[in-house]
Image (cartoon, rainbow, N blue to C red):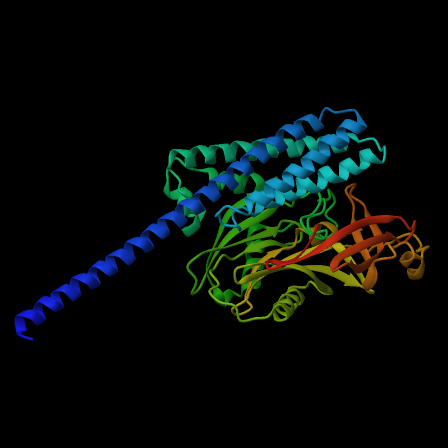
Length: 450
């Protein structure tokens, strides 16, 4: 074979290889395009359903404020419970930063739980109090804000000024700030951040805030004294700069709101210090956590050790949620083998090195105190007889649970299962009444209750 023929064959081979490569590349490109379109359609459908159900929740809450018929009110509130749950389902299907929309999810959870609790009152022929209607009015006002914000976001998405791929790849608040005419993300977070819980989003994890913050002790402190608390919390040697953002006089707990620049970390950390007594109400550190090294048990111990160092003794881990490589653990106060669910602290733990990235102690500060209850009239054995015969008991003990009416009940807590589904059943220690039943959900994102 002469040289000219070899060159021709080589040229043909190269052309074939290029043609195959182009064909494969085009096929992969088309597949990616098809997938992107499918994903976009799924996001659009989920967001459309979220908006529709949120609009429905707002309308139903408006109806519930004027209904005087117990039967009709029960039906309306049941529909609120259903539609707020469905709105929450579709909220989880859109690619927005979960941390930034956590207030929205919390609000929908609380609307669901509170409407359900009021519907139970109606079913029991108990008259709704003026306070119940005030709470419904409060919920409705926030639902209008959320509805308007979601409708605005819908318009921006439809106009193309916001794209799903941008939301999925960027910090949404940073993205919103980069676009002059978009404030929807900060609107959602800031409007609802002021809203405080009526019920809870897990096992009694956001109960009613109390007018008398019994967990707050001590005298009022100055800004300079609050700054010293911040220095002690992080360690003065680790701090580069502390800046007061504002004094939140009208917050549920009046506090000093600081931004802290830590050494060797780009993003700032936020921390709120109570004016009364100088307790740390909340701390949030949003550093990225790239990998997971710690087990859940190790994270639990890290959180418990941290709380003990900060003066929160006797805390026991209860439930947890996991997002990426960060886990948030709920710790409740325990004494004499009684778990006090109202005295709750949430701790966010990085699973790469166990660093504490977040703290929420408002539940504890609202409720922690010495308690006196009426004499326990029911024995554990008698309480056990109140349970469904089919319930296989896994554990039992005593617990203090909050109610919708700003009270607390001492109960026997039974954890059990029926046909592989786990439950928590609460029997009143004094009356023997079944106060509550929660379903335990073990999900990839944590252990939850509904």
